[in-house]
Length: 263
Image (tube, rainbow, N blue to C red; front, side, top):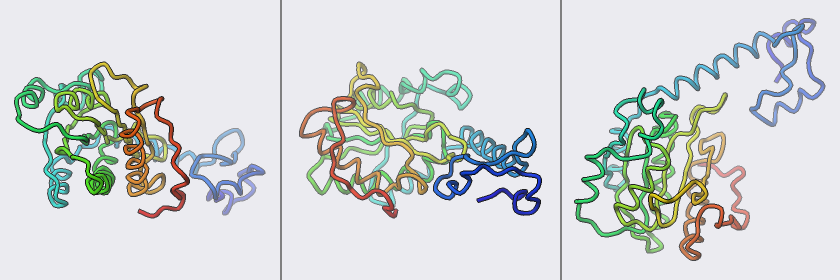
């Protein structure tokens, strides 16, 4: 859509010849120029998006609310902590978010439990907004789908201030065959609530990012939580049959009709 200046004062803003393409994307394209600068409306929109992205990084994770939501849907969550003591330390020390606290690690080492096929871990990551809004909506249909196919599902682990790598420690301590990490992605300018889903087969501390599969941009304006759960279920079944994940596991799923898939 044209900026407010172009509609009210068309002589002040020079439109790009391809501005009509803006109706097909939320990206900042063809925003025009006002002399040698951005139009005021476009500049203000950019600053607003930047502020929302910063707010998402520093927002508070509603871990209790996530746990309550899981309980209401019939799942038993487990609260653990990462080695990061607060948000500031988490942002300055990424390594601390990749490991459990000493208490959390000791708890998993001593807690009696059978090795599950899958453990799902939920964290705020770099966008608490994403985790608060979309994590449970993604996890529940996925777990229900896999449970109906005979998968042994472990307790959902909720870990504030965690990073993707922590799934390897949790999975190895629990003896899980697969782990799935759902956490908020680094906010983009226009996507402050994007959830990422990372899964690994046979998790261990030696695993690297090359051993993980990822679905990103899980949000209503991207891949809906329901559609992401469908895709993840297919990938998990494929991984179970092949024993592979990461770069060795190729997404050869027939067209699932994700475009326009309603949540």
